[in-house]
Image (cartoon, rainbow, N blue to C red; front, side, top):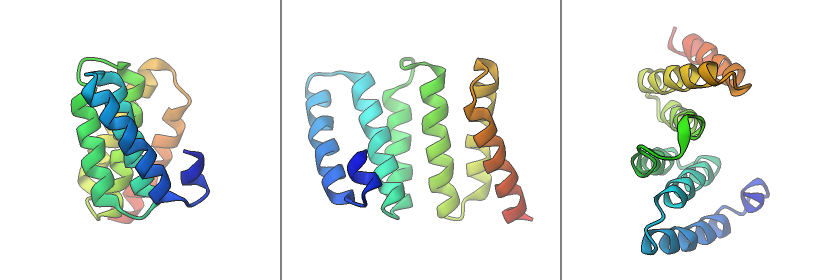
Length: 126
């Protein structure tokens, strides 16, 4: 993720792709799902929202039934951002509403960030 923050998207994606192979080969679904989530973050930062959305959706599938609600909220938040970048505001709001429900139930501070995203998406759609 440090490479992503420094704009080294290709290097970050390569490292994460290597990790993804290891986790898939060893059938470690939690780490596979989290690696897909991180790849989605890299794609989003690199300006590839369609790729980010695909990886976020794959992450949700890999994490189904494991990983906990908080992680699901994180993935849904990133998926919503990718969908917004693709102009799919309705789908983004669905993701963010679910993430908000998760964060509120957990008393998590991320709820404020998601509320801001929903407010922003509401003004874009208007």
